[in-house]
Length: 169
Image (cartoon, rainbow, N blue to C red; front, side, top):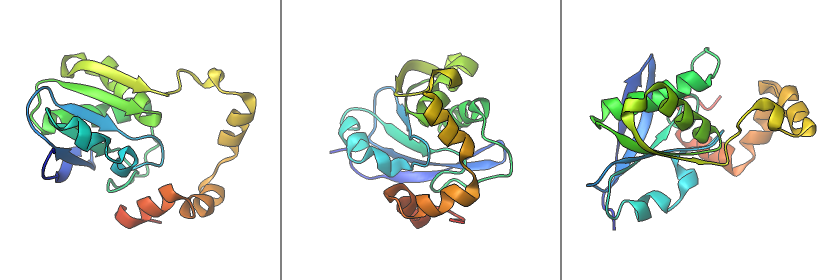
C-alpha cells in the first residue's frame, strides 16, 4: 500500500492551504475536492493511486482544515491556491485532478499556471453558468449562509467539515 500519510499547510496569498500526501515516485498527482468537501470525499482513491506515485489531496480556502477569509471565492484565486501548493511542495510539474468545484479550480490552475501542469483531469465541473438548469440556478441564487448552514450541518459533508475546520461556524 501507499504507506504513511503526511500532511501540512502551504501558505498561499494569506491562506494556509491544507494538504495531505501519500506514496512516492512518479509525477505527483494533486487532487481537489468538490464544493463543501474535504480530502475525505475521495475515500480510498488517493491510497490506491499512491501505489506507484505521490498523491496529494488539498482543501481549498473555506473548506475542511483550510480557513476562510472575508474575500469572495473566485475561480482565479482557487487556481492560484492549487498552483501555490504545487510550488510549496517543490514539484516542477504535477498532474491535476479536480471534481466539481475542484474541477474548476484545477482548470483555472492549468490556464493561469501552464508551466506547473503536465496532465489535467476535470470531473463533473461546470463549464458556464448558463449551462445549469434554471431551477438549479434559482436554488443557487437563493442560498445564503443563514439558509444553507443549518442544512449543511446535518449532512455528511457538514459533519466532516465540523470535525476538521479551524472555525466550524
